Length: 464
Image (tube, rainbow, N blue to C red; front, side):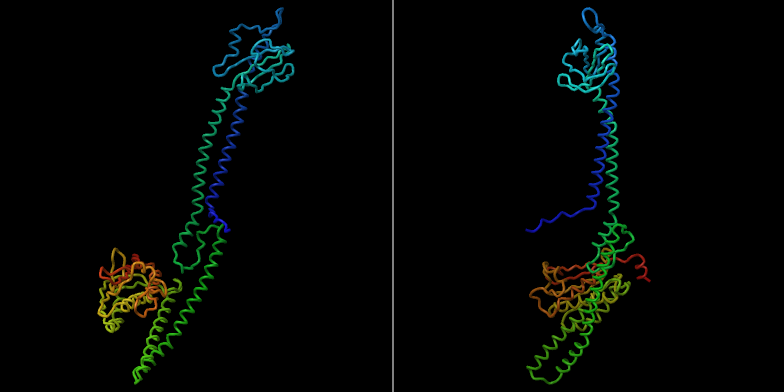
């Protein structure tokens, strides 16, 4: 059986649990210490006052002809054992242990040396009491007990007086610990946000400027992994670019020879085969060019050309000259509605982006249709848009057509499925936004690319 998935560990949770638990244990320990200190203090204070009636009674025991007795008026005796909060009772025992006077239910005290006194805990009618006992020099034992109301109240007051400030300090310490742990974990959150904000192909190392010393080894190891991945990706892209570049020359030569061959006199069956070979060669040439463009778009940002201020209107003007003859050959009305739209971009990749969009529009728009290229600024963001009157792209397919070598099932044409993938790579490279939707209710496709607005310095440079 497979093991159940473990809950993810959290350093923050462990730290907070440890700190909070430690503080709670310390508060509990301080409360217990305060309780025992308060109990001892209360006993010391009230035991001394409890001993006074014991001494007074022991000094007033008389042994006459009628036997031993307490020689105190009833009022005086009641005054000695009076208390507002507690029940106080006394007992006098002879040297043999016989009860001479007082509460008969009060138990006998422990053995006491003559002339000594002790304090001990006992019970009276099921209630706990504190007892002071004295073995007088005349042989009599006197004990006075009282219930614990005063003592318990004093203990509660002392414990509360100590516990409430301690609890407040503990709560403040827990809040400070929460804040301190959150602040201490902020570099990890910043690193996480930085990694999540990167594109999948951004393999730049993590800077160690804000990395805590404790996780610096982890960062270094992760940077080493990124470096290895970057080297492997660079080798792959270099191989792809070199292979595509090397294929362009022989394919161009083969295409030229096939075109020369088609100009001559050929039997009909041979001409058909040569035409198919020519079409396949044209597709292979375009695929090589697109693979080369894809390798350029996927190159690491710091390995490419520096970004420049580019006006999308100028890019559209150049595309109009390049694609005019192709549009006529396809019998498609290619229009341009160009307004000034400066962006900061790669001077090689931005024209490649527009060329792929126009090429897609011309390939999938039937003869007699129309395609329109427009540029401008909307809501402060420069944009580039290409619309066509082709069959359109279903909503369920729009997220898939930007994948490499993906073609909508049933689509006519000889595309390779790389055009929009290249566009997506270039858009991501420029932190732009690619939108694919329907041109209108009558069908067609509209592909719009929104670019980040220029900063103040770049705007001044574009106006210069």
